[in-house]
Length: 399
Ligand code: CTP
Image (cartoon, rainbow, N blue to C red; front, side):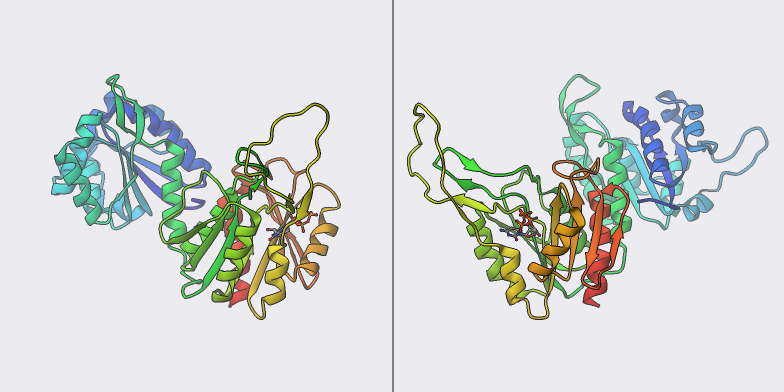
């Protein structure tokens, strides 16, 4: 995600400075080269030796080396960096940044940096909620600094509330997302629909039939397509996932509801990606009262639902239609048969036999099969990265 990127990490004097060590490891693992600048007070919270060892670079604190007078140039540091991440950022440092005060190397570097700047505030809940801090953060946002919101939880003071520095993974993700979003908006002007999540088929007011789909893959794809400039319509079954800004979310519950919404939206789009795990059957009758337990076995009559993808395949004309297939055996054979049957342009295959692929997890291992007979295997990746591979293919088909 951050391969080859130069990340300058600014560490200020907060208890959360210990997380800087984990953040360096996370950034390095993502492929970044990391250099660290600390405020003098930050050295009281974590030693430069620890951070130098993890980043494999000497730590910069002072304007010059008192031993030999060597100058630590804030200008060349700012030029070196592709991103400047200040984590943890104390209320004091945020206030100085907002006012342009430059009384340490971390701050002079901020003023001369031309790269994107991220701050990850860490402080007590009352300091975070104070109008002065809120105003400073707003001012920084206005200066295009990305504020990575702190989390809620137990704070070093023993109080519980908002002010806890974001976790290192969240910070790395925020920086990675920023770089990804800088990619050319190749899908600008395109409208795309994504179906996602499971459906729920009611048996009675209390019970339903569903499946293990979490919706993560479909949501990751919706985010990726939107990041590339597409106007995205996410027709989703019930999930607990939040949806990013700018994505039109259309909530549905049953296969019938999803079918109706998808058929309504599809003709207004350039194409659709069918990620939803739609129930193939639904109870023939839905009881309006709770069904009571009786002795002996019980059977439920099911009738088939609409195959949404097959219907869209029938009416697609020159629109793009991408399918998904989650298989447990004869994977390629089954996927190719679905590709033909539902008139997909290409199909994304997941095998439940692959570790790290399937329901609920954050990773996926996909194979893309196309109508010309080609078949591309991708290594295990995060769902967001897998979404990037699928989006690359969508771009190719739409260009
Ligand atoms: N699909 C759909 N509507 C359905 C069933 C499936 O839109 N009622 C879509 C899925 O979103 C996916 C593709 O069709 O893109 C393949 O789904 P899958 O459940 O694997 O296919 P089925 O045809 O249901 O085959 P089976 O369950 O027998 O494997």
